[in-house]
Amino acid sequence: MSEARQPPMAKEIARNFARIHSLNIPICKLSNFMDFIDDWFFKLSTNPKTPEFFAIPEWYHSHSPKQLTLSKIKEEIEFIRSKFQILNKNVVFCHNDLLGGNILLDHDNPNPSKMPTNFKPKLMFIDFEFATYNPRGFDLADHFAKYAYDYSVKSPPYTDLKKLASEKEMFSFMHAYVEEFYPNFSNEEKIKEANELLKVCFLTTNLY
Image (cartoon, rainbow, N blue to C red; front, side, top):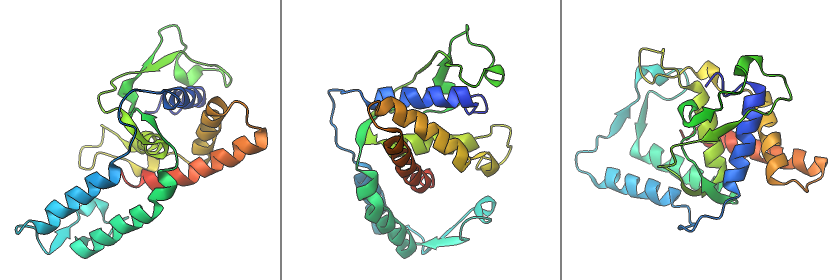
């Protein structure tokens, strides 16, 4: 994902997200994210083999509890539900799996690390097997979460949290997205909308 986060690349990826999110695809347009979570928790809580405590792998201990209980998991689910009205505000057609390998870059483009600041690279998204309608915040947050994927890491969870996007990177991305999605907005409105998207992504990135 290091190439995808280069400023010219990131901005064009943001614009492509906006174009895809603007599509009207003739499939079910309801997001069933919470239904999946509720169904998963019901199966977990009613399974007689479910343990009283869930040990969290050691590699997560620096930023998570060492164990969880069903009641704590339920609390977390209800917290997500309480925020879901905000997340569910803009349900759009989403890719749902935009990692670096799902972005094709035209051969005529220069190396991403050498692209001029205002350069607009030619690229396209591929592999839409997970595409469906979802809150757009989930699609964008999933992409940012994948910044931390590092296949050179030899142990689970195969991520480097230091590689997550900075607030500055995310705002620049959101501003490019908003400019494409809302071309008639004033500059003040674009900045406000970009900041709102930033809040949603901070919340939802942690779900992945």
